[in-house]
Image 1 (cartoon, one colour):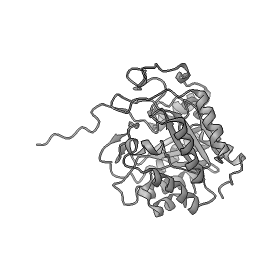
Image 2 (image 1 turned 90 degrees about the vertical axis):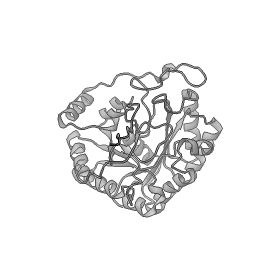
Image 3 (image 1 turned 90 degrees about the horizontal axis):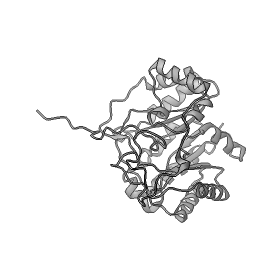
Image 4 (image 1 turned 135 degrees about the horizontal axis):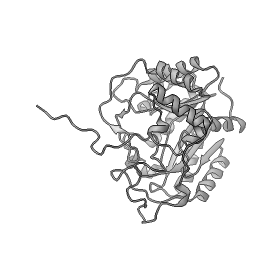
Length: 326
């Protein structure tokens, strides 16, 4: 009898899209590849506040889980106080492996057809005003899971009148019809994360492609010019400041409306080491450069994560002149 393979021998937790900035299984040593200790600006306060406590109690009562909690996001208190949360769909097992990400790579579970309805129920019960839907890559499915993405968007819109919905899917292997399926469900924001610069992309995101990810964002704008598009860059994985500026130019040329940038933190010793701690001043300079290049809103800082204050980012992009989705 064959012993089943253990797909998670290191017992790694789920982290999407970045590792936590405080507590939990972050870098083993607290130092980067240059021997520099973690700086004070990466320390965070414990989540608190009446709305946070209310939502946490509700989650416990309904036996629900969000990426916010699973990833121990340092911004959970802020986002939950604004009644925003991020849900993971299509299971917790990914068909790809990125060097920075702590999601388990394994054969995915069967598709849960009831998941869209359960997510919508949770969104309504939590009284959310803005929800982010993210998920694992499902290369085992002919449509990459696009049907479930679309069903979840529609379920959330039907459950809560006026709710804002952001989707953060994989690249669907560049499948334009699958991207269209998701967009036709009516999300307010379509996000796809580029994550790093061209020189590092193949090593850090081996199953993705730099140009293909850019094309996903272009395709979204072509199919629905009114949708707000968004991407993310993780700094501190070996890129140079000059490469970041060049990558932001590529994202601006692809029509991206919102860009987030945050500090990479090593989830476990099995992951890529932190190359450097990026100073807040560098993040501020990148934000100014990105907006000068034409990106409507750039949210950049050591603790910024892709879904950080997603609803606020959406509103700021609209205030900057991006047309509201029809």
